[in-house]
Amino acid sequence: MEIYQLRYFLAVVETRNFSRAAERAFVSQPTLSAGIKKLEIELDARLFDRRTRNITLTEAGQRFLPRARTVIYECNAAKQEILRKTASQRLQVGVLRVIPIKELSLLLADFKKAQPDVQIAIKEGNSEQLQIWLEEGRIDIALDTAPAGREKTHFEHLFNTKCVLAVAKSHPFSGRTSIPLSLLNRLDFIHRSHCITEVETTRTFAREGVNPHIVFRTDEDSKALALTASGLGLCMLPDIITGPNIQHIPVDGININRTIGLSYLKDNEDSLIHSFRLFATSHKWKPQKGASENLEWAR
Image (cartoon, rainbow, N blue to C red; front, side, top):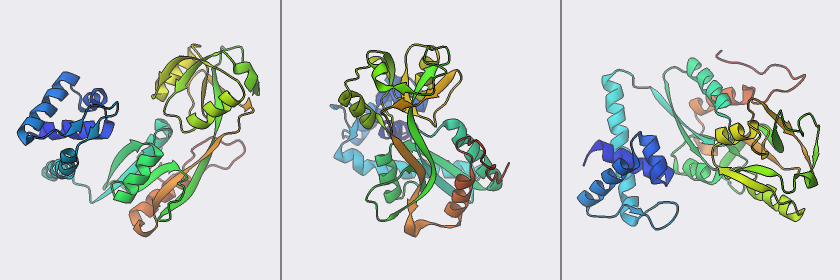
């Protein structure tokens, strides 16, 4: 059994997809598949159920998972110790995919400057995954939407985001202060399949008889923004997501909002989590006209 095989295994577990796992492991898909197959032969057990679209763990895979994680963690810790880079503390942060990477990077950079000995680990997922990871202790705190029915979880508000129409600045709609929903019927759209408001937005369109022409589907915001900016289509997205040559326009008839904040277990807050909360709540997530500058603790 080789370390690289365990890394391939964990990459597939995290992504639930062999192609994305190969990208994460910086190898070709055939190389990753061969490594997984070799591991299964050595263990004499199938680790993944490949019959569904999203790869899932078999019973043997579920038993093997915590062992694999422990081995990789210990290997990384040993390497850091030898290199004298072992962090005195470790903060595991779960992040909703809608959080712009630019704002997240600035927050983490500021926090790292103030807490140079803290090792930060980031896990990206949807709201359901983040809450499960939080309850299982796989993350310490999450940037997420407000959880429903989670008695053990405390939620602290950071900002609100509203679903708006994104158009290229060269588009005929550009410059308008709002758009009637009916005008969007039969227009070309870029569809963000991972959007936190996807279900609600789709239902609103259907209820009002608006049928967009989907020209591209993606779960990557960078692609959605680039294609929208090029004029290929319009895109519905939270107003926290911005990009060059993109204008946000409210849509009359669509009033879909989400609250983004910090989720953490009530009985699990320590000084490190408390410190991160101070940075996150003082971070300027969205520009606000006339608002005072937020605190910048470590710049």
